[in-house]
Image (cartoon, rainbow, N blue to C red; front, side, top):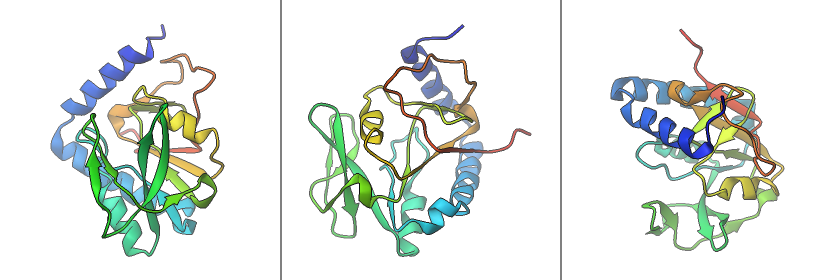
Length: 184
């Protein structure tokens, strides 16, 4: 039986919030290491990452790693009509906090989809085949319609879903690769 996306979203967020801190930190570290080993990461000059929220995988180490390697990091800024754009992140970036408590760059150079080599796409749940259950706003699905670069998502063990758990909709966008830890 497929549940509604809203029901699944709530269940997966609850699972994320209940994840033991040591397990979570260990999985995040291992997933980040897997990400750094991907050819898409190594070849990327410009990488799109999010400014993570408390229950999401912490992107701060990935941002620092990319910047240390000389890669340009861009982060999302929401626009009207559930659109978004990606803005360069550097030491001078000032942030505004959205109504959802998310930090977004106040200003800075906007990168077009063609200028982004790799996008690390967030979500609530993922299937190994690349299906993604987002946060419900459709921002990434809209953006990915016009993005032809590489996409990777990272899934903690509590975020890995089976293919039939939700019914995909026509506008849902897949990611190229979902990195997850092997089952023990």
